[in-house]
Image 1 (cartoon, rainbow, N blue to C red):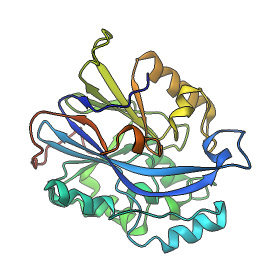
Image 2: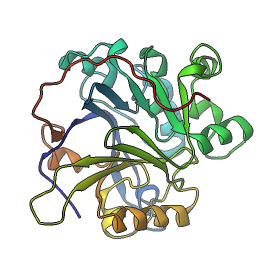
Image 3: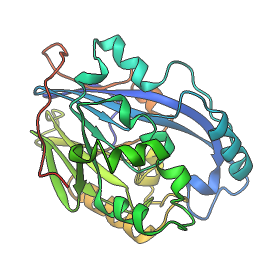
Image 4: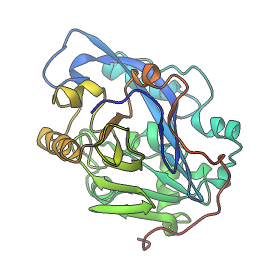
Length: 286
């Protein structure tokens, strides 16, 4: 089911654009649109409520020169941004870096993980399969180490930040009404984040938003057409089936259409005002 109006629930859910660019169409839609360019808008998600401040992905580096050099060479793409990077945007909502309680990375990449160390009190959630692949496959053609995690982030995750790292193997409850499960498909580190929201008034009962990089555009899901930049299209299709069978509301992380569906970036609104939260422990440490 497609939704295009702000929902209500126990959490505020806001989209924050990190950067955008035009990519080969066959990267967005598997096996087609080879001569067409499609825009991708790389979005982070800010989730607040229940004494938690959750950030899904941390955005591109402040300096995009190296990123654009790589993207221009491989895909003829230049990433641009309309405003400040996601960590800077949080201040608009009265959130300090140390207030963020949870950071979810899906998948692992410079557009998701560059600012890991900016949030010193956050529990860091990522797919166990992605972490395993990063450490054991240094010559992976898609998940190259230099484009997956910055060197200083690797040092942090294996050193001072190791106690904050949580690996998601199957389905994990991160907070009341928030769950994550491994999808694979796009990368080994791809996840689906489910957030329960209030019913839509259609008699269908409780609803769940399904935030993921397993679809780039909403049309990947509605047309059941896998993303082109996929490591396993069977995992992509299996994720679509699970999301569809659970009657979830799909929210693609890279769809520029989100700007139209949610002009103010607000996907879900709660009645209580946003407030800073104290750090809470998640699951058992790695």
